[in-house]
Length: 418
Ligand code: ADP
Ligand code: MG
Ligand code: MG
Ligand code: MG
Image 1 (cartoon, rainbow, N blue to C red):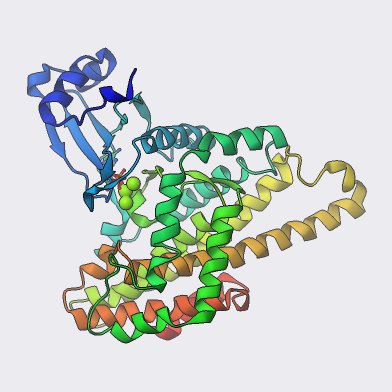
Image 2 (image 1 turned 180 degrees about the horizontal axis):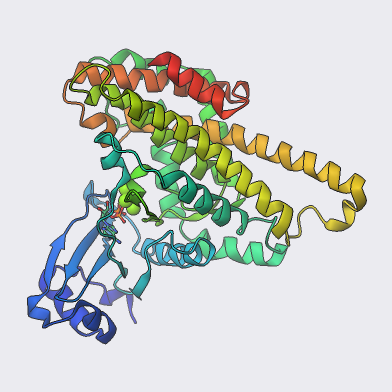
């Protein structure tokens, strides 16, 4: 159907549309007039409705032809809904049970119907409240190891890999948002930047004048643009993860494309580190959140270590790709040398991860899109103290990424700054 058939489905139109989908209508149950429809979108880009009937519920996501956070003055292609659908389908195959089930997709309407996640909450909200999630490490490390490994040249043939890159290459408008908002704007004067003024005015100015930092962020930007290592989620912060104590679901992969693996892993680590630095700002009594804060830092360590272990495990047993041909690593000698090379690969990926984690942190403190970890700290002075600690760590991680040899070097540095 034609692009011109797109229309924004608000409540009444959405009800009619869903009523015309027999499987969805049956899942909801009862007469369409009785369905409860609520818009719950709290993200920056799209509309999300929760629809409940007398039998069941669904979530409906529709892309708008512009950035929701900014308005119609900032157009954004509807095709992102197609890439989100494509990524969700692939992630469902590679990491079953860790993404919401897909129930319906309409490319013309840029609309996707998916499983209603309930009673799951957005992880970031839980972290602000000081909640621990015992299942998270196991699930997020599986999600990242499997989605990244199985979409890489270690698992795919060269032809499969290039076709896969091509399938996502059109999502460049979403990549451009990342390229501008994460890798460029926080380091220059940009109309959309903001920070906790006046406390961080000096730090904001120092970022704009720091050539070592400008080189480091530009190297990361180049790596983001020019390294299609695997299929990235592309926006893997704690606002894109919904959790209960026993379940984890990754949502919102509209930024998906083939990029450097460290960008996804770094996103998870950065958002945990920001939860750590913000935590003191949410205390009602000093020291109240100590146990939570140690859990967060332990989680940072376990996320990297668990990811690395699972990724290495997949490489040892599931490598069917054209990279590292078996014929070049024959016998015990070959096996031993290849194992050393696997460790070296993971060490390079760790360095990338450290740098990308730093980039994801700085953009949340000086760029357009902030996060509630810091924003919900009411006292601006207290918020600025938490943010400045995170920035101090991030600046070091970006400029001297190789000095962080292990994840314990990162958590050790974070602990010293608290
Ligand atoms: P955006 O791309 O605009 O950020 P998201 O996909 O992140 O949109 O969804 C926005 C919000 O909608 C989420 O923060 C969450 O609260 C809610 N949401 C999204 N998908 C689901 C779902 N499958 N079940 C329940 N709530 C959901
Ligand atoms: Mg979102
Ligand atoms: Mg968002
Ligand atoms: Mg989104």
